Length: 161
View 1 (cartoon, helix red, strand yellow):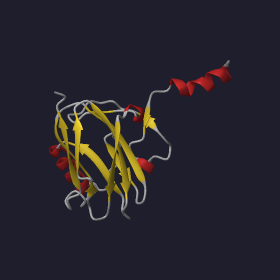
View 2: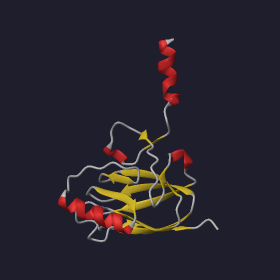
View 3: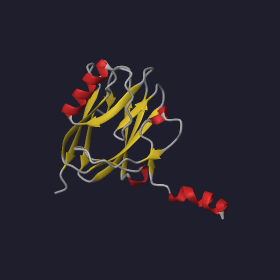
View 4: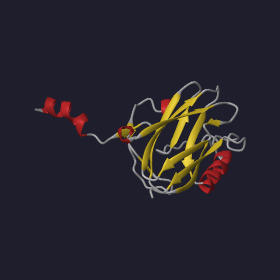
């Protein structure tokens, strides 16, 4: 009976998501569904579409603008084509600016949120996100100096109707 419980336990675990590419060697982690002004985390299986985003050492994202419909769940598949560590963090302009200032003061600060993906050079990361609030939001690399160099993009979430 104990063996049966061990074999069926994985099926009872909550949905998981990888938000930080290769930085977490332990594998997928539980989805933290905390509502933010720009939406809420989702499991990869919930994504209606995938958007590929490239980042590089020229401190740019390609594409640098995303259009999403309110309520749409999107998988952001992020490829780091550079030789430096980069990240993609979703948020409001004000929150990203404040976080970038904090990162300048504490460049080694570790953070792990489902709206962030830290992607090592030559690697990939993913964020799956439901944009359930209309508005204009942004994404950026908040590693000290990258944000200031212009490594940011915009997200327009258009209302359902």
